[in-house]
Image (tube, rainbow, N blue to C red; front, side):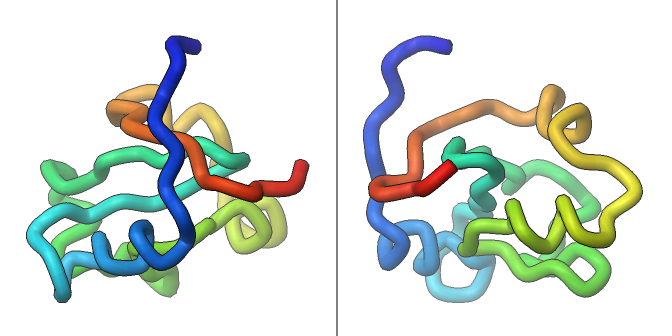
Length: 83
C-alpha cells in the first residue's frame, strides 16, 4: 500500500457524516472514505457509526471484514493504531 498520511482519532471522529461532509471509517489501522456509499448515509451503517475505528466491532460480529473495504479508497492511516 502506498504511503498514506496519518490522522489522529479526533480528526477521524470529525468525519462522521454530521460534523463534516466526509464520512470516514477505520479498519485495521487504515482509514477509508465511504462518503459516496449509499450504505453510509448520515454516517451510520446498521449499528455501526462512522468517524471511528470499527476493527473490534467488525471482527466481533459483522458478516464481512476486510473484503468489504476493497471498493473504498484508502485515504490515510490511523495514528497510534495497535495491531
